[in-house]
Length: 135
Length: 357
Ligand SMILES: [Fe+2]
Ligand SMILES: [Fe+2]
Image (spheres, each protein chain N blue to C red):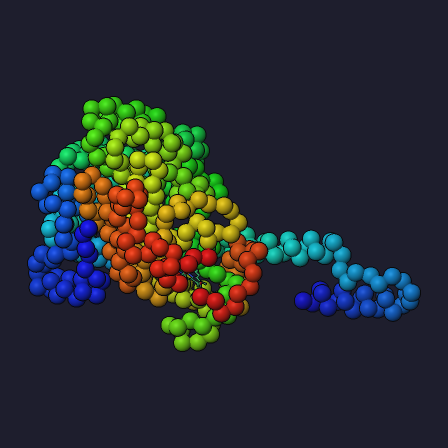
C-alpha cells in the first residue's frame, strides 16, 4: 500500500515537473513482477498451511476434505450462513473448519496465516466469476 | 425391487433397538424370489481413515463414523451373508491405526472380507495389514456368484523407492491432490493371477470384483483412476454379468462399461468434492452418475455413510445409507442395461444440493 502511494506521488511530481511529457504508466513491469511474486509467495505459504502446515491439534488438515481447495467457493463470499445466523466472510468459515474438523484454535481474521490460506484458496479458484451470496 | 425404509424411521427404530439390545431390524425386503440361489445381501463399509493423534488419542470424528456404520450394519435383517470392508482403515498405515480400526470393526456381526487401501499400504507396503488380515487378493464363491478381491493400489517401483523412508512415502501417497503422486494399478502379477482365477469360472456365473480404486479412469490427479483399468476390464469382458465395487472416492459414483457395472462406496469418515469442482483441470465423471448432495459442514456425518448391496440374479443394487442426508438407491435397471438412481436419475427430479460447482 505504502509503496503504491509513494509511486503515485513520485509520478505525480515528475508529471508536474516535466510538462508535456507523455502520460507515464503509474507503475512499471518490474513493479508488476514484484507484486505478483509477493502474492505467489503468500500462495505458496498458504498451500503449505492448507496441506498440514497449520497447527492442528488432531493432525487433520484442510486438504483431506478440500483437495485443491475445492468446495470452498471463495467467489460466493460474503454470504449468509444459516448456522452462524448472519452474512459471513470467508475467514469466518475458515475458522469454523479450523475449530471443528481440526479441533483447533481460530485465527484472527488478519493473522498472516489467515491471509496466506486465502491467497492459496483464491489462487486455486482463479477464473471463476464472482457470485456473492450464492449457495 | 428392494425397498429401504426412510432415514428418520430407520434411525428412530434403530436407536430404540440399539438401546433395547440390538433386536433385528427389517431394512430390506428382498422381493426377487428369495429362493433363487443368486439372491442375497451383503453390507459394504469403507474408508474410515482411523487417525492416531498421540498416546491413546484418535481423531474422534473418524472413530464415530465407523462406529455408526457398524451399529447400523448390525441391525440389518435379513442378516447379510457377509460384510465387505472397502479399504483405508487407517490414515497413515500405522499399527496403532490398523489395530484401533480392527478393534472397532470386531463389533461387526458376521464375516468380514477386507480390501487393501493406499492408506493401509504405503507405510510398510501392506505387511502389517496382511499379517492381521491375510492375502490382499483372493476369490471365493457365494450362492452362485464369484467374488474377486484385488489390491488395486499398487504403483510403479521407481516411485515406491524414491522416498527417504516409509513415513515420507506414506505421507506422499496420503495427499490426494499431490502433484508428486503416482497412479494406482493392479499390476501384471495380479492380472495374471486374475486371468488364471477366472479361467476356472463359467462365463455365465455372475462376477463381483472389489477393488479400492475405481477400475475405470475418472480423474488422474486425485487417483480416481487405475492405470491398467482397461487390461483388467478386458479380463472381465467374457462374462455375462460383472459388477465392480470400489471405495477410495468418498462419494457416490456409478457407471456401465459394456458388461461391467460400477458402483462406488461412501466413506464413513468424510466426503470428497467431485473432481469437476476443481476448475484448473478436466475430469471425467461417468455421465450416468447423479451426484450426491453437497455436504453441510455443520453436520459432521453429513455425506458420509455405508451401503448394503442387494445381489439379485447376478446384478447388484447399491443402497447408500447416509446419516444426516437422504438415503440413495442405485439399482441395476435390466431394461436400460445399467445402474440408475431409483429417484434422481431423470434430470427434472434433481434437487439443488446435487449441483456441485
Ligand atoms: Fe479413503
Ligand atoms: Fe483411498
